[in-house]
Image 1 (spheres, rainbow, N blue to C red):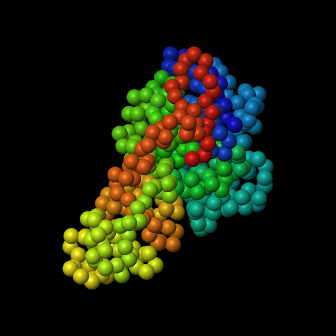
Image 2: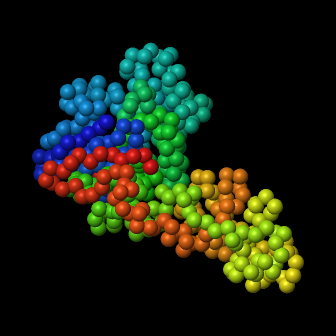
Image 3: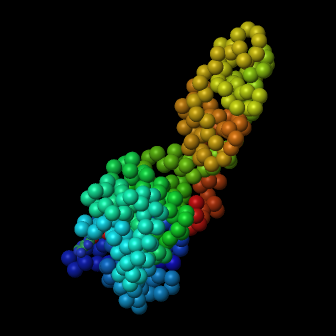
Length: 391
Ligand code: ADP
């Protein structure tokens, strides 16, 4: 979709902003450009809509060299979102969003109808249409910025640190909202950030840049966490990458044991025979009631007579990740995680050790499971790195 072939950008003062970049960004996916400040992310982004022209190499869009397309025509198909939203302060929210349709000569009525539609799409109430940007919160302004970029329904969206200026809670909301929007819209999005957590949350693929405008690794988030190309990438991704990787493992893949799950009607003698320090007590529908410490069971009767420790929280095999399971295990009084199905019925339990062992097998690291190519991009005519599959 968007392809960089041996692209470099050098400035007359001797700065190499981007150095020999070859990269192919998948259509309909979010590609995140991430790296420390000054490593060439914004320059790379701006070469897509010709705000910056490369010194060497070719950028192409759907197979067409973008130098062959007039900049205004090119930009009509490319929405652009920046930090602080960059809204026109003297225009209402609705007129801000209608900017591009109006420029394209849609006529005021049609442009405003489209703007109203977009306002709703980005989760803002219709009542905000008549406000001015200064009357909105930072997060709301940013949503308007996204709506404005979507004005003419461009297939490509460039987003340059769009959420960096808002507080962490609003930022997380905006990220979640972008994921929701993207499921619906399937734009080809190029997203610049210096925040690796944001990159991992949003990216279908992530290009990690290092200082000097060099591409260090281009991979899916899972691969980046599992197999960083070198020490720089490993350091940038962070020391807790093992835990974060679990977010990409489906809880349904985890091995669970049923032996420690007993109904409240079970005689205490049978619970003792399980020979484990804790058993999970469930009702007749297999809904979890709590943990029974086997050492503290009454001498006779059933588990219904036992004092139960609170359950902690369960994880769902229908949608949660292995990270949620590990979290559940670590917070549980028994150090065991309770896996439930979509109806909330207990499927089984596992301890933290079993969970981490199940998700760190060598097959998870092997290149054969890789959806995207990985590795250091050298200077000697590297192949164009293509984006991998959706995670
Ligand atoms: P990032 O987005 O990763 O922070 P940029 O792409 O903005 O980095 O910049 C990459 C490098 O290019 C930086 O060293 C920056 O100072 C330099 N640079 C950017 N624009 C210019 C310019 N117009 N003239 C000279 N140097 C520039």
